[in-house]
Length: 462
Image 1 (cartoon, rainbow, N blue to C red):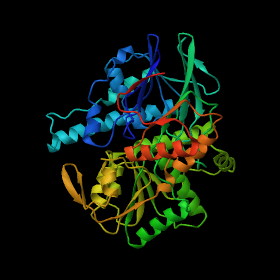
Image 2 (cartoon, rainbow, N blue to C red):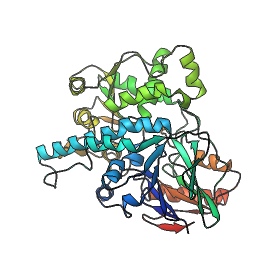
Image 3 (cartoon, helix red, strand yellow):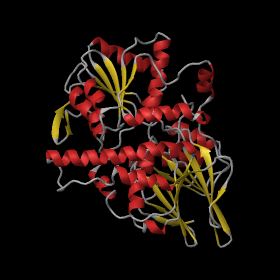
């Protein structure tokens, strides 16, 4: 009998991993890093419950680290199958994974230098070279038709509207003459979109794995541009810096798109805008290149000769020297730097400088998972630990939830209402417990669907 095992993104928004088994074959959907609390991060170091060598295929919903960041380790531990994703997802992975390996090596080296790790020596989960090697297993697949992997598995992709290349994955599982469709939503995007195409509604499924990141919240409906401009203008009046921890994939490009429009329309004064993330710089070029992902508004801008991701006075700081030089600037500016949850990368050094100064603003523009440095800062703490030392928080802390790349519960419910029929079971994943439970109640009450919240490592028969 075919089975589904939940290897991640249960009780948390990170670590997405799901395993389908039929016959003697195994197919994995997503292979992400756990992020957040120490208990979750330690799972990255635990052996996978099944031998990686026994998995034939890995299929990706999109290229965020909590969905692809464990792949080099999976391959290091014996996986020899194909890694399948949309063309844009494969291109993004070529940037994201080597960067992840590099950062992990850097963080381990810094921990060893400063002596604040409990491990001697501190080691990376995988290296830059191992991440580069992992990319040899990647293969881009077309969206237009179903892909037959074997007599047991077939795939179909649908636009998910989350980030460039993001797809829902419909897997048809066949065994002993029976056939079932399982839909993996991945991360479901917003309605409408700034840059990429909106989520579509598939024909239906027997089972659905549905994200619940914002299952207990609604996004603000106010003017996101006006709110963003107001935060920047008020910070500039104080002589401060606006530091935005932003995901290199998706959020940075949306910010550049918004800043360009605000400045060109005279709704915000032009300030130097520094993108201090080599990965975000490379990803922005991919957003320009993959026009098949763009919505109609973006296409219209490009036809008019506009550069959607290039506001005036934009600076791409790719080298370490350029990054350090930004910290020496004393006039008002905007810094966009990764990572989005402040778990690592260059943004940590900027936070160390900016947090103690009351003139500055730290602007969060995305979800901050429990246990992350970003969540600590956002929660109103008086200090936060960085590089083994507490850093006092005196800067203003702002949040702009309008830019979330995840649908809120109202958007999710409206999307579900468009399905021709309810799945036999809908599993809520990729959410904190309170958010998942809240969405479960809403779907059960309003739609009368059968909804359950799976546990970590739970295995079900299909």
